[in-house]
Length: 241
Ligand code: GLP
Image (cartoon, rainbow, N blue to C red):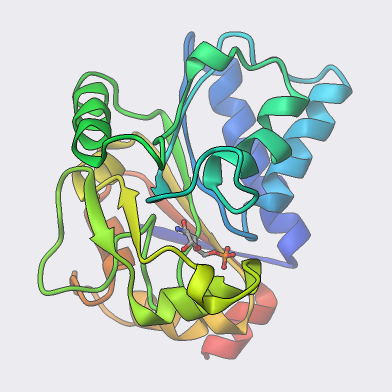
């Protein structure tokens, strides 16, 4: 696992977009692993701007998303499907049939099976991850053990509080989600975790502090990946030291 400290969040986003664009240019039919939250927004903005300038093409690209809230349809403004439509899919020439998402109102076991079958045949070429304040990746919450495959998870209280800012009332935040598990995540050929802001300092500090892999700090699983990068800006790095 390597760490890159950039001058700013904008620079981190640019570097991340360049990593994605490099895969899009060099792999014949790339599979991009995508995540949501506020942190990857800068990368999506770089990608959509580069697409409008004619610098990149998505017609040969496939995507898979990490996770989704249980109970939210794609039309709900806080579903991750809605987020992807808004920030990427509606702005580039990705073919809808090449984008794989969890259906928040589909039958959960069937959703998990579909994801696991897909991932067992097609590892991602590159995956972007954000990180929860409690160190979660996707919706793999701190626990006694890691879960390997795609599964239904009960969200941690920390996560419900952190994500309440996107909903009118905290009671509106779904209590469950479906997330890709650690097998899918660690099989990606390249994993990039981007973090910014002081709220992430505790988790990133703990991740970089030692060589341990601890299910109470889910992001620590990235230490088993062949090619994982932690991308943080100087402000966050200064706060950790
Ligand atoms: C959610 C998502 C994660 C994301 C995290 C942090 O819980 N499931 O994939 O990394 O939020 O989001 P933000 O970037 O808004 O801090």
